[in-house]
Length: 135
Image 1: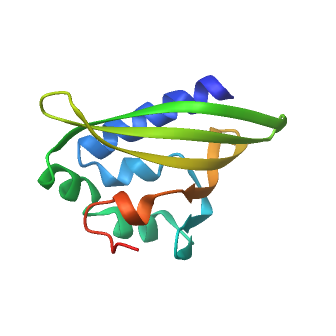
Image 2: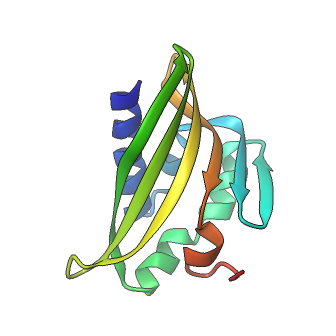
């Protein structure tokens, strides 16, 4: 399951960089729960999450970010169907310099489509994401 999740992370990063917002929701099981510093949101269907994510890459690009690279820091399987993954997201400018990092923890459920994200805990989303309110 870890190798498949790593592939999905790379596909997600590529879709986000390409502005393909619809493809960024392909790895999620719905309803999806997103936990941030000051809020918890539940997205009932892909379109709800897509609307929330619509301007994310544009905001990153406007701030000078040119590439995103995910790295799995830890992966813990609890049974064949459930796992938790800690991921570091690195954001680079056009010169290849890392501009900032984002850390998320994902709860995954293994399905016939492979591992699907059920819960996202975004550890520093509110502080780091361009265009988000600061705390």
